Length: 72
Image 1 (tube, rainbow, N blue to C red):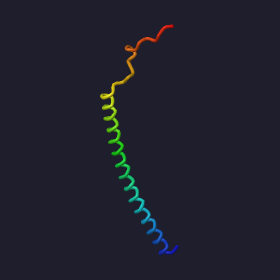
Image 2: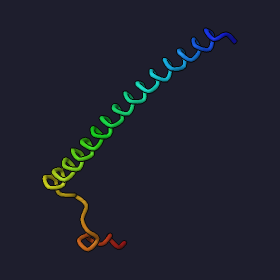
Image 3: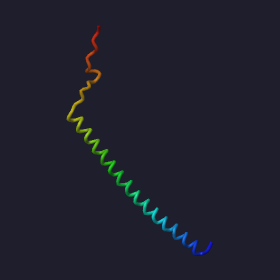
Image 4: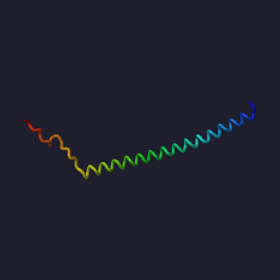
C-alpha cells in the first residue's frame, strides 16, 4: 500500500473514532438525564401513593374485623 493510502485510512479511522466518542458522550448524558427523570417520577409516585392512602381509607377490613360467613 502506498503511504497516501495508509494516511487516508488512518484519517478515516480517526474521524470515525472522534464521532463515536462524541456519540458515546451524548448517549451517556442522555442516560444520566433519564435516570434523574425516573428517580423524580418514582418519588412523585411514592408521594401520590402516600397521599391517596391518607385521603381514602381502604374498604378492605382486617381479618379480625370481618364478620364470619353465614352458616346455612
